[in-house]
Length: 218
Image (tube, rainbow, N blue to C red; front, side, top):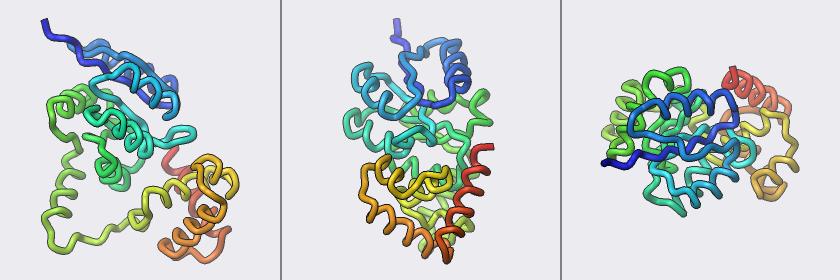
């Protein structure tokens, strides 16, 4: 008799975790072996529980989903990770795959496609929407990749993290403490962000970041 595939869920919204768990548990051959609301909790439990796959959100308190993916795969390189997030797929899917995830799914699609996506990555495949999959293939096969319409694509993973935390209202010191980097490094990241986004002042950067965070949390 085949052993059920064990899935771990990481999301800071209890209702979302409950919905994902119900979808997975009612599927024959799949069991939810654990859940976490933070990356730090997930990292400790995944190492102990050794699941076959993890469903991970991008926005988490403390360490975000991208950093969690990098850290957990350092300890569990065979773990299959599916990102399920409300964040813009065009901005985050490639970053998630670069970090080591095997799939990216928007939360609006999760109920219908979750099991299909999990089955695909557990069997060794990659899961992306047709739109993003085609875009990434074009980017990889084109000699000169098309320039992105989204200026946030210019930001590194760390710069995007600083930008997001800025939009959530954290001070320079608070961002440094959360990311375990110095105030000087945070200021350097912010200077790079302003340059890449062509934003002149700190207040302009704050307004831009707040608008973006509010838009992605709707």
